[in-house]
Length: 287
Image 1: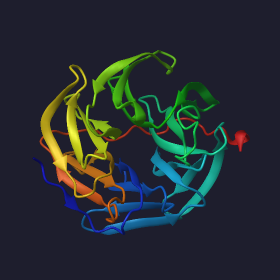
Image 2 (image 1 turned 60 degrees about the vertical axis):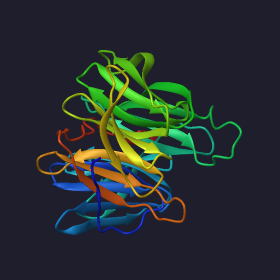
Image 3 (image 1 turned 180 degrees about the vertical axis):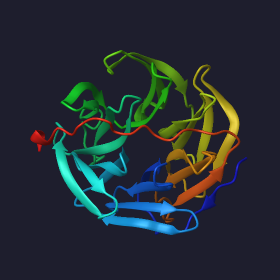
Image 4 (image 1 turned 90 degrees about the vertical axis):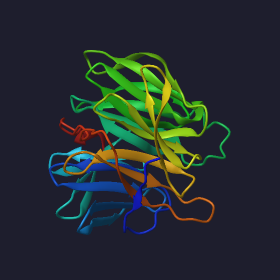
């Protein structure tokens, strides 16, 4: 069992979306319900704390700065100035917000939308996974309930989960950047798959919401591997590789059982890679 260390950041209500920015040698992460974006560097502490006008679902690299999802709007984040600028309103159903998102190897954005009122009777029908490039939305996969964790194996294989299914699916990535041929890669079998990342051996590290851990899986066989990181909070939300040698797994959790969520770091025996950056121009005419 691998051990994680809690890092000294403010308590999180719904911690999510840890993202390593290699150009800044820093980690950025969000508190969705706390409506906060934070930046952190070990040895220094908090580098950035910004309040957002709506729930913030994710950040991805955008050159030296960030692209964020706030409510249903894509926003640029000037890290140095501490400024968030709305640039693109995503097409959406009523009552949804952005959730997890990552960029593909060509810099397109894959972003999930989900209902923020989980008591709605139609939660399984109003979510979607969108593929966004410089011209706007180029593909919509719907309906989905809780579109979540994403990872690419090489250029042609994409992994994604709709958390409510309890499974991680594999897609084939087509030359134009769209995805097709969805089929099951992993049946989790306990705990709900939330955010995940891929290591340099092609294995997935999956945050298991409700199970209090990050678990490593082999997506080629669907088999659970021996590496597991136990966390004190029940609701583990996401993980990413980072650090100078990319051997640190950063993990976010959410409040549960009266305990607040937090940010954790764990040294692991394999490395990962930094996330892909948004490479396109932003479709400003859509805001």
